[in-house]
Length: 139
Length: 60
Image 1 (cartoon, helix red, strand yellow):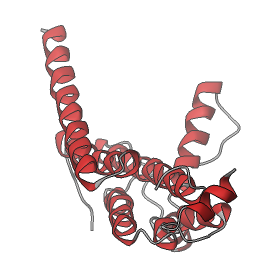
Image 2 (tube, rainbow over the protein chains, first blue to last red):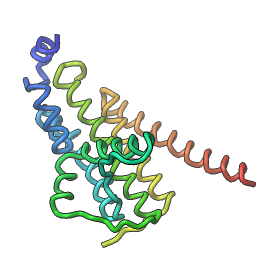
Image 3 (cartoon, rainbow over the protein chains, first blue to last red):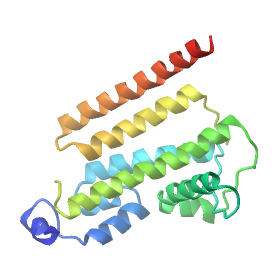
Image 4 (cartoon, rainbow over the protein chains, first blue to last red):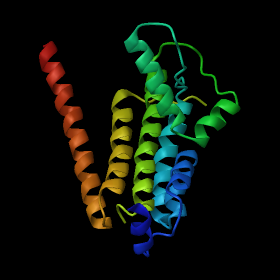
């Protein structure tokens, strides 16, 4: 049982796993910070934030939800959107501040878009790790 | 400010960040994390250059 495991492991501060997951998603690295893993939290923060910022600087477009096109196109758009949103606060800040790259097909924009997605996917890995630490499945 | 990186630079950056994260979340000790991160980075490089040369040979 996760609750028992958490209380048995004295190196893990007692935190709600879902609060940890929500925080870890919203601010990259904050889940680990909440669990007392400050070094790892800093590395995760940097590892997610740098590709995200590089993606913005390369004017990579964010994926948009769509209901048109074939199944594969919709899967790519929705999958990309989920990965973009997985960046948490950086994504919402970018949208809030009106980040709108020009709709042009250049290889630089395409790489930027992939970096934005990659940053979100890396954050998902960190969120899962924070959840496993919070539930005592790993230390 | 617009940044323009080429395919190789982007691939190397992705390999670096992915290796750091994979090392961080999969291993228990710092030493194992560093070793696994370096291993992943090496695998990324091997795949990058291996597939690149394969495609070059394929196209002649």
